[in-house]
Every structure is written in C-alpha cells, then in structure tokens.
Image (cartoon, rainbow, N blue to C red; front, side, top):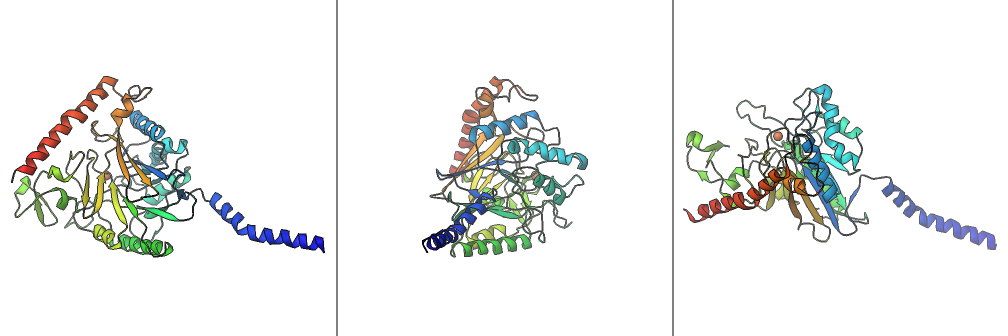
Amino acid sequence: MKHIRKLLAVMMAAMLLAPAALAVAADEADPTQLRFNADGTFKIMLFADPQDDQDLEETTVAIMCEALDKYQPDLVIYLGDNAVADAEFQPDAIKAVTKPVVDRGIPYSIVFGNHDEEHNISKEDMLAIYQSLGNCLTYDAAPQITGCGNRNHPIYSSDGSKVLFNLWMIDSNMYNTDPGVGGYDYVHPDQIEWYKETAAALAEQNGGEVVPAMDFQHIIIPEIFDKLYMELPFSLGEASENRNGKHYTALPVFTRLTGYWLEKPCPPDVYDGQLDAWLEVGDVIAEFNGHDHVNSFMTNIRGVDVTNVPTVGCNSYFKDINRGAGLITLHADDVKNYDYEQIRMYDLALADGSDIPNVEGGKIKPYYGLVKFLDTIVIKLFFNVFAFFQKVLP
Ligand SMILES: [Fe+2]
C-alpha cells in the first residue's frame, strides 16, 4: 500500500510538472521569440540602404561590425535597398550584407526597398535566401496581400509571459505603375487592412488593450510634406514642390525638424491612408524609414514620431556628416518612452582600434575629426541660425 501511495504521488507530481516542462521546452524550441532583457532594455540597430553588390564596400562592413560590437543590439533591422547585385550574384550580395550580423549570432529582420527587386530576382526568391541564413526572423505573414515580407514581431517581457511591444515590418513597395501618377509606390489598401486585423488580434490576446508598436519600412509616409513644408496657395512652377494636388515651398521649415534635412524627401505621390490607420488603431508611436540616404531628421506627424535613418552604405550616394546607423533602446517599464541615437561613422572611425581608416575606401583619422568638427559646430550652428530666422520672419 505504501508503495502504491508513493507511485501515485510520483505520478501526480509528474502530471503537475508536465505542462511547465512542456512550456519550458516550447520556449527553448522557439529562439525566434524576442524578449526584453532582464535589465528591462531591448536594443534595435537599424541599417538603411547598404545598397551594394556581392563586393560590399569594406568601409560599409567596418561600420556595421564596429557599431554591432560597440552597442550589442538585441535585434538588427535592415530598412531596405539591402542588396542590389545582378540576379546570379544576389545570393552572395545578401550573404555579404548580412554577414556582420549573422557572424555575431544576432537576430535580424528585413524590409525590402525599391531597388532590391530591380535585378531579375523576385522578392520571394530573395526572402528564401535570407531565410537560409542564420538568425533571420523574416517571413511573409500574408503572401496573399501586396508586397513581400509584411509581418510583425512581438517583443515579450523578459520572462516570456506577456507581449509588451510590437514591431511592424511593412513592404512599402517599388514604383507606382499608374502612368497618371508615377513616382514611388505606396502601402496598398490590402496591406493596411491586414495591419488593422493583425493589430486587433494582438489586442484581443492582450486583454483588449492595443499593444504599443513601431513601424519599419523603406519609404517615408506622404504626409511628410504637409509637416515639414509650408503650403502655397498656387504653384510657382519649378520653384515650388508640387505634389498630391498641393504646392509647397522648395525648402522645409527647419524649426519643424531636428537633425539633418539634406535632400527633398521622396514619399509616394498619393496619400495611402497608412498614417490614418495607425491613428485609428492607436498603437504606432514611431515610424523609421530609409530611402533618402542623406536625411537624418526626426519630426512628429499628428502624434507619431517619424525618423529618417541615413544610409550605412559607402557604395551609393551618402554624406559623411551623418552616415552610419540608428539605435533604438526600448524600456520594458515605459515602452512608449524610447531612446533613439544616431550612430555616426566618424565617431566609430575615431575610436581606438577602429578599422575604418585602414580598410579600402577609408580615410585618415584627421579627416573624420574634421567631419565631426563640422557636424558638431559649423553645420549645427548654420541649421540653428537658419531655423531662428524662419521662426522670427513672417
Ligand atoms: Fe530607396
């Protein structure tokens, strides 16, 4: 009888412990689940527009490696125009651009830009190449809708018990095929519908509360002109910016942004309703995009932070004044209050032991010192004086 009781007790204990053991096994079997660290932080590094082929510029590789080693992010996001080789070399180009991240075992995700698919290889085939590499979290959550790789990445609490934050990865597509409109493509209605449905499902799993989120996509939202520029009552021809049936000043109002505006933003030529959908759902607190390589401004449009991340690449066009990467730090105890830092190539190059001045295409250290001086003193002063006069003049 004693033995039977003992056996029953062991069986009961085994039955009670089994779900916990299964839960642990499930967590361990899911390395793709993103979690806040035990100290409550989660760091996301952003690489925009590397835009290079299989022979990636050595300076680009050095910037990526040194930024990753210095800041140790929990996730890396490639913001599009990631690899642009001819079809036969595109697998090698994708391997080259992700190698610094893959080698370090850091999870990463990508969105496509307008140039990735211009080389006779489909986004679906490129996605399969990314997925064949280690630590790639990218997948296509809704193959039936426009674009490729639309998805979201929930970030869980450090114990894995609750979703605290969410990352939307959206394909902003390529070029508008409507000959009457042209320009860059936009986020299509079926993508916006998918976003709303997925956000609603996420909120339902979260006890009815929307999960705060950020959006990552290659091309900036069209409302950027309404925010940064003054609208004119009529066209001034080429002296004004004419789009969406509206006319804007050629230069932005510099008091409406922080950071650098160094080129005209290139959003879609039509309003796609994406911002309205974010406001309707109420989850997106910030958007990050690449595409305009030399812009590194931040602004806020109707309550949503909008940040243009400048290029990390040294192959296409760039400016050394702001070239580099972006770094977001989320805090589990206050997820809406995030930190953003722009990592400058010149700061990495000036650090002891940096390879950037030594690799092919790199320049001597005093050059990077001069760029830093220009950035911190001269150009910032110029922008501030310009902004001051725009404020006081009618
Ligand atoms: Fe682009």
